[in-house]
Image (cartoon, rainbow over all chains, first blue to last red; front, side, top):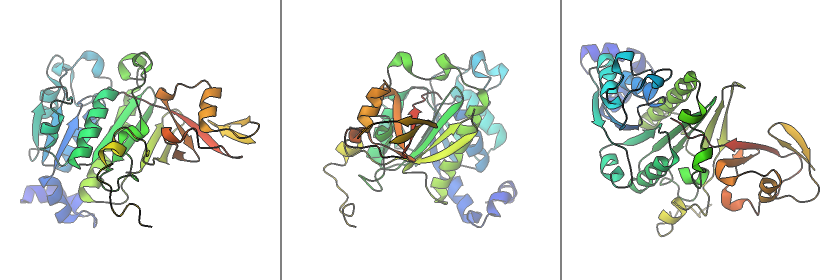
Length: 264
Length: 66
């Protein structure tokens, strides 16, 4: 770290649990943020500010006026620009240490593995369940931590998935959402609305879990799901066990049973 | 037995499984998770998970926005 970096990250370095070594770890880390929307905005900002060295941003959308009530990384003059380009400019203004890699596409089963191969961890704030299923499966197969956040109306849900660490004990996303809700009843921002600050709450909590995973700080959220109810101002962490009949993790790990899983 | 569902007390007679509760409350299982005493009940365990007196149940609606 040069002098400017030591000053920029001074409040991180002061933390005994982070220190100069932790900051070096952040600078060397590579995180893929899927979705540069309501959740992606605070995620990218806090990860860039923290000095996460390489941040991939995957999104195929352009900035629209109706995004700006919550997607605080984009500005009025960015309307019509690719969200990845707008996010890259915002991160560059904040921290020149950070390299933003634009993936201007929609992640699907055909491209997910190749993109995720370039990163240590994946965090998402996408607007649909199908993409979450693809990310879940791909991260599981690659053995990479997957932080998943979702919002709707006044609520949010957040979880970290690392089923490869303890197959059959730690869950994957599909142990929580077995199948996508019927399309016409899905709670999403475009159809149901969302209070903008809910994106800030959940995106920032997601950024916190990403930094914890990179730095191996505290208790991983893996094995729990965090539920935020903005109207009741209630935040609770609920146990999320692996489903022994999960269509994803129970199948992927069926022939690859952790020999230590049964020992008690 | 008395069960608390989303903070409201409900009375049930005899053994009730989570599967029966979902049916009784006319819930769409694809849209929700059932939380029982601060733990999500795996979907595959609905039929074999019996509610007990004093259980606290929360119906967690999936949100999908970003």
